Structures are given as structure tokens and as C-alpha cells.
Length: 223
Length: 359
Image (tube, rainbow over all chains, first blue to last red; front, side, top):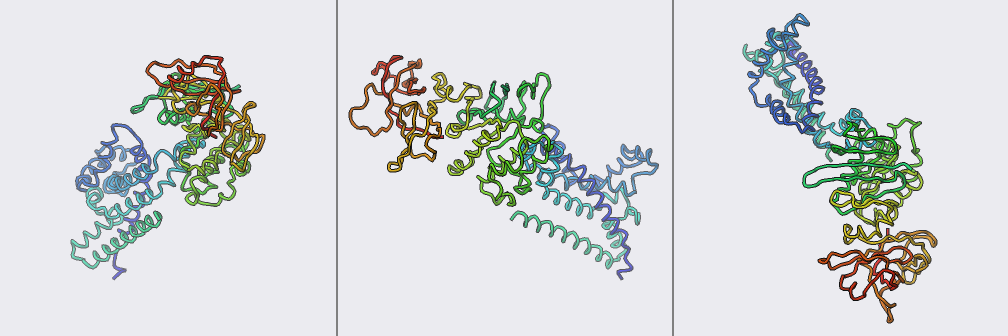
């Protein structure tokens, strides 16, 4: 029975979630830092934009991403000109879409963590001769580590469960864009409940255990 | 002699700082004034932590800030150590890690203090292996001072470093700060609203009130200058340099020698012959024309000569009088008393000192 299951969607999903999380942590750090410290009037509008994927139907997000990433799109066009291949219905396209989709799950915990760290440790570090980047790496990041763990876990697990956006932008090409949630959907469509169960319970269990570990860790640290 | 000169103008919610100063960049200088005078803000401007339009700062011949020329040396390049009101240790690092933070960032050839020197001076050895959360507040502040010292600053800024500590802890830390100045020859700039903290430490005083510099100069001179007595209010009072003459353990008193006149204070933990600075608040000095003929509970009755009487506004009931008791002494008396005693400069009389404050 187990041998009969195609594990490709599982690996693809893990790969997508890992790459997306890494990209999000890299992009989310400066964005969250800016949001936590700026006095700019653009802050509130940008915060709202970052939060959009939380409430927007994934199909709406997916629809615009499809246009953006398509051969005629702002992103898809130049990409195709440079690499010769389209962005839509590819793994790279999925990564870009997932980055948008999971953005608030990474940026918000980081922003909260940076706000909590505050200005005081920065001032201490500067007065001890540490430059801003040095201060960020040696003081802010260690002090914001809980926010980083939270951001990584939420970004990762949220990307694992992505469905609507992937369907719009990536379709369901086995081994290329067919992720776990889509595979489950397709198993259900063909009435293969046994496989759908197995995949679903796997995803459910995995996500639960990860969240359990993280929340447990946070509680333990607070003591 | 190298000097620290600056000019800062800063507008904050409900508060304006407009301070210009010129201080010796050696020894210890105190920025003193009532709460809300802008002392901490001024210190933060000097450190580069607050940016003020038109701000100007020069240390010796090095220009650190001149906003009109677009010059602003950021705080991490000023090499000014900063000790905050709260210890602000890095909670993710051990005591050793905290001390090492600034130390590591100075090239060995550029260090002006050595690790062991600071550890010994501040008695940090027993704390090194501990985590920050296992230290008392007093110990944390000692580590914070050590951390700032180990970054080899050329000027140490202290922003009410004892404010978060209780009286006992304060007494514990003050000698360490004195030793910084004496043993490391590190110039200090010390912000406080408590003259008792400044007294044993500072040679120079910058008097700040409502965001502006009221007076600046040698501590003893500023404190006994009638011109500033009004802005100091209840804090006005001369600082006197005395020498410990003897201890009387039976009555719990120490006799100080004030230029030949005895001054009795509660028993001090200081060696006979050592110098001690004390302050006599103007409001604790009473004047009497003849020595008291019957017994009095006031221990300290000194001979004095009237030097100067402050111009008093008609609507004020109190008048400041400057006297000579071997050193200048200020007295705050009522205008009515001034009239009754018919005081004139040069007149000889006696002062009764009701209380003496110690550093």
C-alpha cells in the first residue's frame, strides 16, 4: 500500500517550503526592521499590504500573480527574456508566489520581535563601538531569536498548506508543481480516499508536531 | 589643556534644550540640575544618540559634529563610553561576554585599559562566569561600567548611573567611580540631580536649568556663587573642603578641620588627615551677631565675615548672603532678618550650621 504512493509531491512540498522560508527570512528581515523602526508615512500602507495575504482569497492573489508572472507580466516577461523559460507553471514561479503568500507569517513575527528588542540594546552596542550591521548580527538577531524561530516555522508550515495560489500559478504538473495539497485534492477527486487520508494525516501530524515543539520551546524559554 | 565644547538645540514634546558648554576634557565634570532640566538629553546629544539640527561638538582639536557643515560622527565612532541609568547588559551574553563586547572591538594596540586592570578595579572576578540574570542590580551596574571602560573610551559619559540603586548599593559603587578618575585618568562626564553623588567626584560643574546652561566652572566656585543660588533653590549651598581631624566614638562624631575652625559631623569612615568634601545648604545656616551665651543644641557655631548680600526682589521673603568662614559659605535668611541684623559687607558675626551634607 505504502509503496504504491507517489512520494514526489511530499518532497516537492518540503523543497518549496524550505526555499520559500529561506527567501522570506532574507527579504523579511530588512522589511520587518524598516517597519519596526521607521517613522515614515508609508509604514501603515505597507503594513496593510503585507497583511493582505492573511485575508485575501488565495485565488485572488493567485490570479494577479498569474498575470504578474505570465509571459506578458512585469516579472514573467523580463524573466523569460533572461532565462528563456516562463515563470508560470514552474518551480521558480511557485517560490515567488509562495513568498507573497506567506509574507505576513514571516514579517509580522520578525517585526514584533524587533519592536520588542527596542532601541536600548542598539545604543549600548553603538556606544561600545559596534557598527550598525555588527550590532544587528551580534545583538539584535540573538535577542530576536524567538521571533526568528516563530517566523521560520510559520512561514514553513503555512507554505506546506498552500493550495489556491499554487493551483492558479503552478497547476499540477507531477514532480514539478504538484505539491502535497494538490495531490490530496486530486486523490479525492478520483475517490482514492485511502491515499488522500495517508497524505492528509501525514501533513496534519507533521505540522502539529512542529507547532507543538515551537510553542513548547517558547514556553520553556520564558521561564 | 584639551576641552570639550558643544552646542545643542533640541526641541522635544514640551521641552527645549538649548545648551552651550565648554568643559575641561580631563578630571570629572558633573552636569547638575533639577529633574527635567535636560541633563540626560544633553548627555545623549554628546554621545551622538540624539541628533540635533545645528548641533556642534568638539573634543580637543577633533570636530565630532557640526551639522551646519553636515558633519556627524556616529556614536559607534566617537569612542565615548556610556553608562546608562539602568545597567542595560546584553541578556543573551554572560558577564564575560558583556565585558568582552567592547573590548574585542578595539585593536590590541589601541587599548587604553587592560582587561585585568578593569576586572581588579571593579572587583569583577567573582562575577565573570555568572549569567546576567543572576546578578544584583548593583553588580549589573558595576559590570556595565566595566563594559564601557573595556571599550577604551577617551571620555566616559555616566547618566545617573546610581539612580536605580538603593542607598547601600550607591555607597558601594561610588568609590569605584572615584577610582576610575584617579587611577585610569579617564575624563568623566557625570549627570546627576543629587549633589551628594557629585560632591566627592567632580571638579567642574555644569549647572543646567530648563534646558539651558545656567553656570559652569569649578565646583566649589559655582556652588558658592550668589548668582546661581536662585536657580538652585533649595539645593543652593557652598561646598567646603575639609580635613578629617579626629573621631569621637563616644558621641559618634567626626571633627573636621575647616581652615582652622572645627566642624562636627556624624562619624565618618575616613582616616584622620584625609580630605573630605562637605556641603552646607544655604537654608541650613542661621546667623547670630554674638556667640550664643547659653547652651545650644547646634554643634557647629563658626566665626564668619559677611562678604556679599544678594540683591533681593521685593516680593521675595528670602535673601542669600555670602560669608567667609575661611572658605565661602552661603546662608539663606529672611529679608526681615536681614533688616533686623542690619547686615553690611565686612561685618563680623557667627554662623550656626544646622546640618552638613556629605558626599
